[in-house]
Length: 128
Image 1: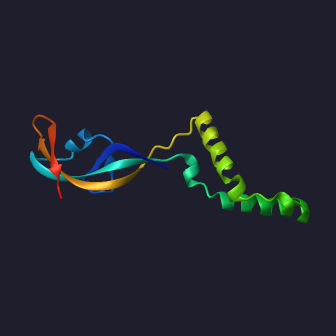
Image 2: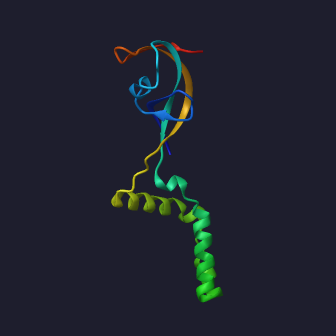
């Protein structure tokens, strides 16, 4: 997970667009409107991996397959977690697996002046 300085915009703080121009189409009249602006959080596939759970599953499966001798595998998140996640991200990049979403942080209200006829906008000020 990486917090960025790239802005995204929303009418309802649920659906964000990476381009403010996309919001202009959602307004039916010109004037001054309040919207939300936030900064993006970029994710990689490993941000959503529970390494402990995977290692626990490997431990259970190896013990079931070959018995107690597999208990000496000793995979731990502390010792192996970061390299495992790095390998997953490298695999995802090589295979072209891209996440088609991002999160948000630092949400703030701003005022924008919208001119529907010209499909134009101007950010006026923070709405605080």
